Length: 287
Image: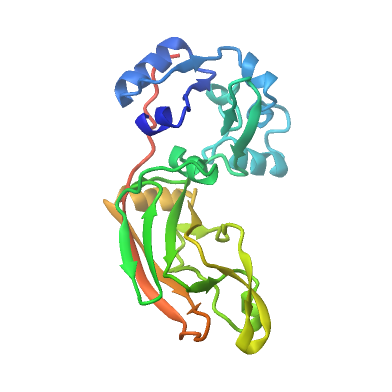
């Protein structure tokens, strides 16, 4: 919250729950930002995000295979219930001081949720590195950290890698692989418990390498990579996380660096991140 406020960002959450339900939840979870009660889902409807599948899953077409598949994807893997009618499709809006939506983050699967830290990273708003690891080589220095130190079923988070090439040094950006160079990026061990999205790169620049008379995309100034990871939203993953205290994500930072005269051999630097495993809060207060 301090970092958000320092960046000029306020936070509010809105749901179809009653004030009593929200008060119980806020006290239980230690939440001190506004939780807004939208009983009747009027505001949710005005934003165009009312989850109509929840009601459809209780209607005359409830046994239709397509409806059942939509319920599992957009409502609940446990099936539709009256208690869920009125909920929104979950997501996050960024709104400016004039009340205009500047960006939004929504998912195709209701169990997948962006974390606040991940949204800030994607918005280009700096957050203090937590549980960071550092590395160096003759060609560059780097600092890598997860956007969140704990994950649960469906958590969408990122591993950020801040890379600082040494003076007169460059590393290769996407597109350079066609010339035979290794593009910098994270190579993390695959797992059934999560999936990895394509790495997000900043804009690169074109470098002219005179000895070979070639133009290639590179990074020469400090830059940051974002490797987004999504924890699986399956019941199997939830059960597995319930039995775990931590989850380890390991792999390599791969890159190839060159200066004005020499291209060095491709490098693979091992990296590893240990995250706390959490279970969803399913306790419900009386509505």
